[in-house]
Image 1 (tube, rainbow, N blue to C red):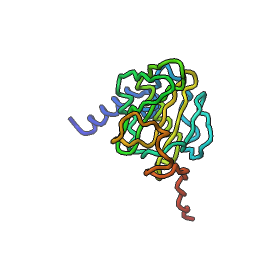
Image 2 (cartoon, rainbow, N blue to C red):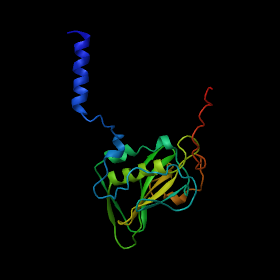
Image 3 (cartoon, rainbow, N blue to C red):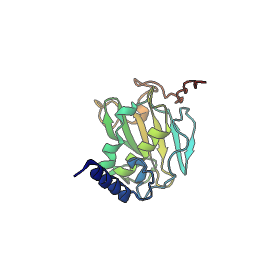
Image 4 (tube, rainbow, N blue to C red):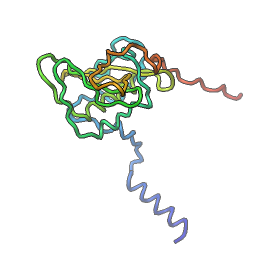
Length: 193
């Protein structure tokens, strides 16, 4: 078979797979757990101050806990789990820990335990990685509150040698990974005239 014939077949297969030529979103933004409100992709990214911010109906804070390292917070490990985490009233549980970074889920309710799917925890943790702190320098920490279900997800520092009952507020900001930094777009080089 000629090379031109092989190329023609490949092009035809690609067009058939995507006839409109539409751009595909990154897979981690395509699937939203059905029981979570979906405000879409974050418009404001990498907040570094400690104030309350809104992301759709979600309230989030950045840099309020000791920080974890962006590259250690592997949310896909949580999203792949098909677990329901039972969180006791008014408490937190560490659901992921790697090196000096952890993901926690906290029950805001003081009257009942909550069963929270791991895919929801992973999705909310990933939003925090997009919304909070520069991914290029310093550490990251954040807290995202579910708008209706009475729980929140926290990313930040975790000492994986400590038992999982240590909560995010146990550690002092900023911690070993450094402060939550403002992300500054790199300057474009001057154009040749």
